[in-house]
Image (cartoon, rainbow, N blue to C red; front, side, top):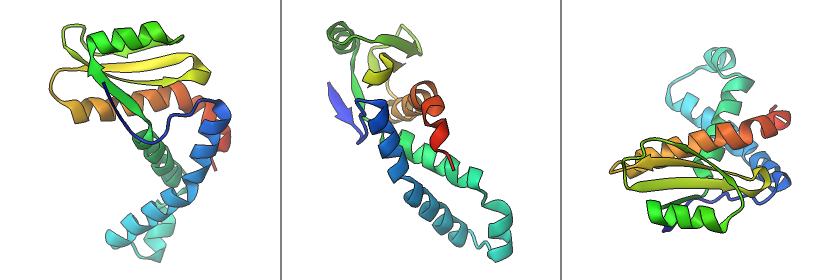
Length: 142
């Protein structure tokens, strides 16, 4: 089993603190991308809204979530060793699994894959953010 990512919050408070740290980075990324796209001041003001920056922050957060990657046996062993409710998306007929657990939510979100590891990791991170973090972080959105 291998891991990938930076954020593995143990508590809701830790998740909130990590999310908060990304606000300046999200703003800077959006500003740099808009500049690279040639937005003038007027177009920037019209198109770059708080919602755009917030979407960037959510995407950054999701992309940094720690995930575990392994075969089904490793995944099932991990589930047996941890007290959480697994939510799995994908096919039962493939060999590999990527998962993220949020101990404070007592839930693990998993996605199955056969060969497209990076696609599965990206999908899982978006699923985990939506299922485990989005509602909880709602109060922190600017």
